[in-house]
Length: 113
Image (cartoon, rainbow, N blue to C red):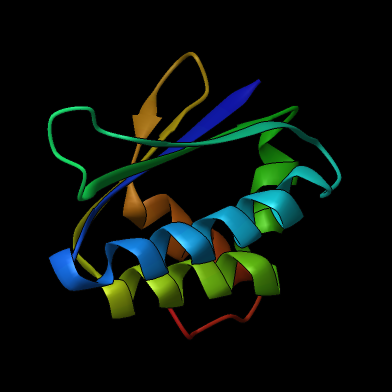
């Protein structure tokens, strides 16, 4: 099992727009092969902090997801509507970040990171 955690600090005037985009994206992500769960939440103390957590059956399914149009849409929404973000991948033995996403996307020929 592999867990992908994305935290985004939304631009204060774009929070609702980012939440809407993340809801649509998480609904589609749940339907992808190998996705066990996808949760969207907001920080209780700072409503501009948004968290997306995806649980995948295997690393290979997560890497396929990184190359999908839906993940590309997520990256675009985060870039357009967020101020800062962090990506963490945990497979139980190690934790990685954005560099693992870029490596997986470049293997598939996706350069629009």
